[in-house]
Length: 157
Image 1 (cartoon, rainbow, N blue to C red):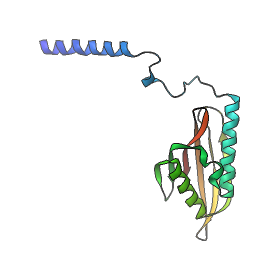
Image 2: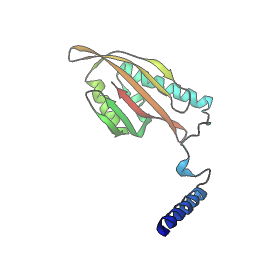
Image 3: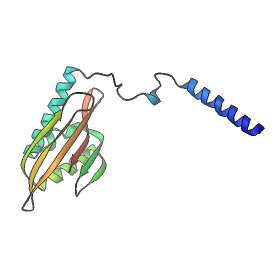
């Protein structure tokens, strides 16, 4: 019985100590951007511009206009292809190969959200691949890092 009481006292003391050590601004518990954080009008325009360059680049089959905006690690998911986290160079290679192996028929974002802390866009990509027409959904999301927008996710499914 003494051991149980001792354990309960120790746990209570440890929890109280742990609570006392947590400060309101403690980095371990703060999000990248607080929910109350606002994106400036300039940043919204920059996000819109980036999403437009992605749309144009895919439509003409040239990713060089936006590949410099890939994050250090990008989550890529290509149906019947690669899926996972890739470096910016690997992501560029994967997308170049995907686009080079197809003839782009059409691409346009149908939904764009350039506002907020996680701008994204999605749209339909129509290609010719090995003599057959294919249709795929493209989803791209961005995040703000060091005052610039980076592409953190690129899905073709």
